[in-house]
Length: 155
Ligand code: SF4
Ligand code: SF4
Image 1 (tube, protein in one colour):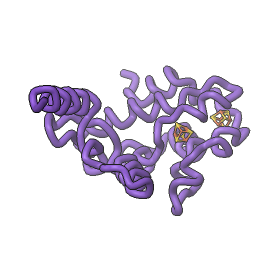
Image 2 (cartoon, protein in one colour):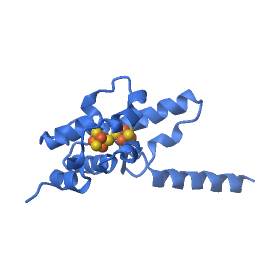
Image 3 (tube, protein in one colour):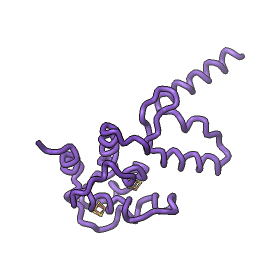
């Protein structure tokens, strides 16, 4: 039976990569992370996956911000951001969830720990409260609605 990762490689067209490097040039991880390396860049991960290295149990797949800029510039139609999302789901299903942030309220996985840290850092730099970075999108909406209701009742 075909392994799930093989299905993802085909589904998201990783085999079409022509190693042009446009995705790495466009990637914001380059700017955001001081320790950015080829190893966890889109190209680096695609290469490992095609060489049949197991990326699901490592840390590399937990750095991407899922901004899809790489997909927009890719001349070969590789869907790297979508691949990464599914690879993370697979990692969590296999018990590798140490790099996954789970919602403080409902416990659902919502983002990589590293992405949450990057958001917190940005919010802090802009003097914004970071209270919502620990909730999944649904709980964030619920929490906002609760705050609004409380504000209305206070009037
Ligand atoms: S832009 Fe597309 S084809 Fe070029 S290296 Fe990145 S994934 Fe491969
Ligand atoms: S989706 Fe991930 S790999 Fe692609 S440009 Fe954004 S951060 Fe980089």
